[in-house]
Length: 179
Image 1 (spheres, rainbow, N blue to C red):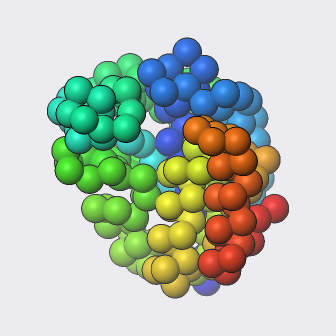
Image 2 (image 1 turned 90 degrees about the vertical axis):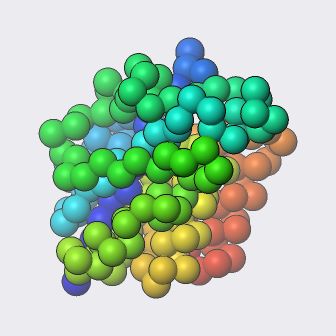
Image 3 (image 1 turned 135 degrees about the vertical axis):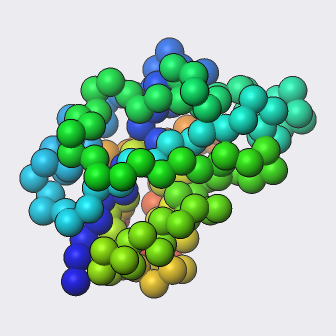
C-alpha cells in the first residue's frame, strides 16, 4: 500500500499579512518542505481554498470570514516558501458559493484519487489546525484512511483559546494519530 502527504491550504491569505492570516502560519514552511522531501510519500497533494468572489462564508454574504482565497488572486496562490517541485497534485476546494470547503474531501475527488494510487495512509499538515486540517483529517478517517496529523507543521486560527488543541484531541478521539 501507499502513503500520501496532504499539505492543507498553505496559501498567501492564510499566512501573516494575508486576508485571514494565521499567527505563525508562515513558520510551518520548512517542516512542510521537509516532509515532502524526506517523508517517503508516494503522493504529495497540496490543497487550496479556491473560492468564488461571492462565497457564502464571506462577511458580505453574511458569512463568518473576511473575503479570502478568491480564485485567481494572489492571496489564493500557494505560499512561495512551499517547494512546488515536490507536489504531485493540487486540489481546489470550496469552489462553489454554498460549500465551506473546509475538508479537502468535500466536493472533490480526492478520496478516489488516493484510492487510485493505492493510498491507505495519509499524513495531514498545513493551515489551519482547527478548521481545514481538522476537517480534512476527520473526513480522511471517515473515508477509511489511516491518518496522522503532523502537529509541528500546523497552526490554529484560535478564534477561542484552545481551539487548536481541541481540534487535535477530536482527531485523536476519532482514531487519528497526532505527532
